[in-house]
Image (cartoon, rainbow, N blue to C red):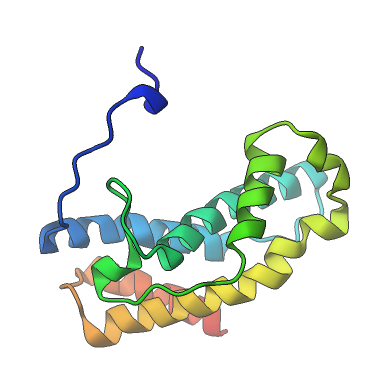
Length: 163
């Protein structure tokens, strides 16, 4: 079995309108999961599982909203005519992902309960702002044709975020 690391990178292809329309479903999935994951579960195991899922979706969205140059077949917010901009959390997100989620490391010893809530309290607001800006961009500027389902999903997330 060939590992992902040893596979040759996919050849770059400028995304077509059809590709952007189809990948938007995946972008909306990441947004919906990030917004829907509650961070206040009273059960410790459930809370930790949700925090890990939240961190993973945060990392994906952070990369989507900040990346200015395509690497391989990455989907960029610029593919939808939305300008990338820094969310000022990339280093912290990457460190937490690498040290607290993707690898078993001694750095976990320095991450207290208060430290673990950092992502939700500090980064959550920043990424929610970018999500709202992106969804308003899709709904108002229509850089690609949205299906009825995609439009409904965008509207539902906007409503949840502005409640």
